Image (tube, rainbow, N blue to C red; front, side):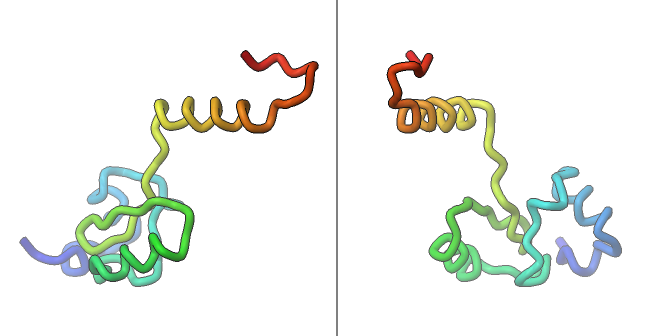
Length: 88
């Protein structure tokens, strides 16, 4: 299999190859196609977002529906402390 840099000519090609993901999820440093596990681990230590390494490209993990529900529940639990709050 050839590298992503050899087969990808445009950003549109890159997005299509990665499964038509949103452009905002792709990290540009290191350049797409050259990232390695060390880059991924460094990024996890510095940022509060989750990333995955896909064919040498660092891609931010999308939050799924289940994770969104959990996040909303936790947010409501820890921020709704007044007597007028309608949280369960």
